[in-house]
Image (cartoon, rainbow over all chains, first blue to last red; front, side):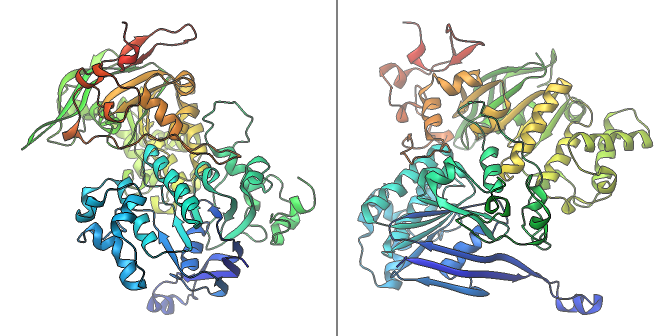
Length: 302
Length: 325
């Protein structure tokens, strides 16, 4: 049984104007579908990464998993005991008036777990004396270590990490990614890792789901996805990553932008930017078939 | 040389003593060349850009050094004259396109205002030029978008408008400070292409400031790596990436995740860049450097030219490992 499974999960947000304005202008309610029928399974001990651009719904999925949002339809099932979340901004996610000791110990008070703060701090590469200091005395990387120590204090089976290194400098990002990998090996943690950065994802993920406008368009083992991307959007994303090896590999130039999620195009949401789109793509929504939601792949056209 | 900076030193006087934010920064950019300036937060890369355009936030001030634009010294110009240099001769693009645009004016009005301020054109000629600029930066159907407000544009399109504003007066130098950082990867790739094309077709010298070595690899001919207010390495992009000379550059390159089929541990530089009030004596990188030796703890290295048989351009690094014995 998977540790976590999402079945046909959707989430709508009401983005209507205030009631009075709507009544005066005779406007209907407007709903934005941020997540649209997502199916997902996460097995114990693995890292599942979700990648996508802004507005793809990846952070909404993270919040649906930990229960910060309730699904509009579909179900989220968790067979473990506890989960914790690590957020992007290490400045906003720590209470500036609390000492590190109290921040790290908070989950223990609420969840009745018994862990040693000094040991937790050492586990994430800080020193026991840091427990008496306040968040402002730490750099961004150190604060993210405090967030991780706090998450571990709740003895979670699953850690949901929403862009955990996006606010950090690259050399500090490398430290945090290495730390997360080590902790996973030592403690047998399961990660759901949300990121917009394909290179970061390729360094941590066992499986990768690519999201576009609220739907998963491709989900595969990482090695497969990065060596043989199949969905045209996955290919485009990989081609857009700057070529640091200076290999001069041939790349298709990227075109177009993500459409407005309030009025998504009919059919496949990617069709206006897709070089392989045909009549069927413009009218019929593709479903995941052998890990890819694409008519052209399914029909063997690409 | 379009731009030449010599020994620039920027200081921030404070009650507890003077902080040196930039220390002996020298660099130059030729016509049509893209120079990448890379470094982590606090390395001094944005301050270098702000010094050039004379917009250092007081009490910050240029303590010594010279800045030359096309053979004319610009670091001592009176404010009114400097204001004309900005916009007319130097264009600037910042990270967040929303803060660079006035939300109360249409993009057409903002472009026309910039053009009329800097160029001797009439109203209708200014409109023509504004439209052709929008076309040049890749805004589809510019006539239809001309009377739109900034909030009606997507992030990528806004950054294109900001670039159109920056190049409106055909500046000789374009300073782009993290122009793609707020954008999605697919949009980033499009903006990179645009900047490259501008440098190529107009001969604009471009100073591209970013924390992202990948963006520099895609755009720049040369790169300057900054650390704690100094340039620690400068050279052709390809050579600096493939064979870094400074241990910091080497660590930085190793710590950048690359799209890979297999997971592997990233190279890690322990610790963090020192704050301005705690820069160690000797080389500022020495506490984190795996190759430090006695001299590094005492003497601060200046840029040392390194000649290599394979070198296609001048390479230099501020590291005692490369000093002549």
